[in-house]
Length: 318
Ligand SMILES: C[S@@+](CC[C@H](N)C(=O)[O-])C[C@H]1O[C@@H](n2cnc3c(N)ncnc32)[C@H](O)[C@@H]1O
Image (cartoon, rainbow, N blue to C red; front, side, top):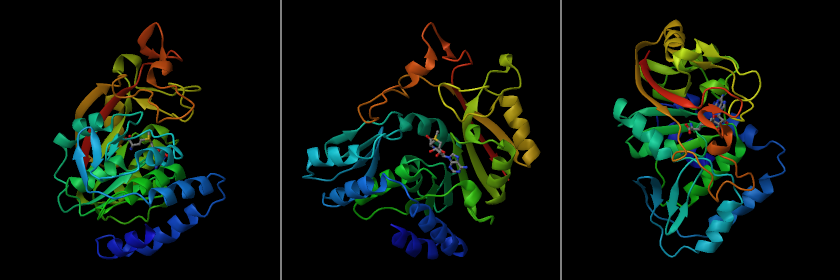
């Protein structure tokens, strides 16, 4: 995969970054992680399957492979659980992820500038579900960065099944690892901001890698302003350990303004529902999902008594 990336990177606007990105990715893949042999083994059996063309047939990213060995493919893909993002369909195998990614994409896509011919970064891409959608929407290069190695293996598993894969890649990097050069036309940060200890540094890094007139697509958890300007969870939020700050939409707007973004538009605000996030048999032994993270007597509150997840999409420009 890194060889393919190297070739396509060198022919793209990202050519000044290729060497640095590849060196950092090789380093990240070479960590001592006891799961890697299991994940490599899963990839090597998936490589024996037939490939097919990638299309978006909502809600699925669909690979029209014929004559797959369905049981074998299912058991190999299940070596890579939990599948949080998706869903995917490969031949007649449906990989029903915890999240219905199509629902988020429907909230985002109508509001963004066309991705045709663009160089796009998907920060915190998970297994690349949205990165693939960005390339299917016409991006010349869609680069996902995702520090969690398992999700990189999931990306590669899906890629292995695609005949003539598009110019979409996921590398095992954090935003902080990205060379600071203004090369991306559109940068997506979806579901990432609230995981940052320093949200202002994250916004600044996003701004610094956008081209002049580039567009930021920010999707993140917010709170209704009746709860104040922001909530800093004392401990967990909806059972997540690493949620640092939940702003009101006004607070989020002022953070973006302070970073120097302009033309800031709140284009969507949606409460997360159990239709969008729910347990499936692709998430492994820990079968808890949204309904277990909410107060059983009041689904407007999390199990910790904080406001239930509400997600905003904001579009702005450099
Ligand atoms: C909640 S998931 C969101 C995945 C996907 N973007 C979406 O919207 O559904 C957040 C992802 O961001 C990744 N992440 C967290 N901090 C990051 C950082 N500083 N740089 C890049 N990715 C990060 C996490 O590993 C995780 O997979």
